[in-house]
Length: 404
Image (cartoon, rainbow, N blue to C red):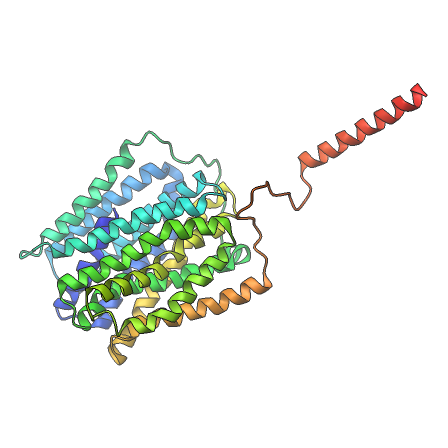
């Protein structure tokens, strides 16, 4: 699925640029994909709750596979905008199925690691998709056919799985207000993550071409960005399982804030510098979202996970939609350097928010520890035990008095 998604996102950006569409309008067209994410998170849960995660996933990916092929019928920017909206709707719904399923199966002690493995698979696919940009395509149809084929292949393991969907007897709603109350850093982090991820996927190929990289080096730049995020997932995911996840998020953005501005002057020096800069950029960009997911899911029940997944995707989509539009306009006015400066600017905003949140707000959960956590409030079990012990003590006292 993500091989197809990575290839499709980059080829659309490149084809629109080659067709002479201005950078701002290219960013606007491709950002409709993320507007569709927002709409999908508010509407697609009805079908997921009705038919289950497996059947919903296969339905949405089937529709997505067919939409991709329509790109080859006409280069009209208006048609591509409509198609991009439909593709974003279907993929967001599919992600709600996957992420709610994973979070229901995991626990607070391994959620960061499990989400990291999931993101490794995600970015491995996205990176592979970037390398497929080098396939010769004189007709202009071949790439779109390949994207559709990969989406179709993604249905096979899910359709044949013997594992049932996560059994959720009731579905609780989840509002943005509740998310902010439970985990404000998850809320802010998803928005910032959306801005950064949308910047890479939507404007990364355009930035690479504007600084003079050829098609091969453009694909390598995108490839190493995603590989950097992929390689950092499991180590940082495990680290977040062993300590306060909020510190991990803050350190990630702090590092990106410091190094991003200097990358503009090193990326086109040679392949080695290109790879190092792109991987650092990917590490700070792509690890933030799964830790945000884990941080919120540590605090909610299984009944809330589908709606929570939708809300987190919604928040990231807000960033993905608005970020490329704002940054593409800045690139058109002030040049390509605005691409890397955006990473520093938005990361710095998150660091300030995180510092304020960490100083004045407790975690509300225990992410690690060798002993079982003690409940903060009395439960029925502890009440019964205490009553039972009191009765035993009273019986012993009566027996002792009678014996004497």
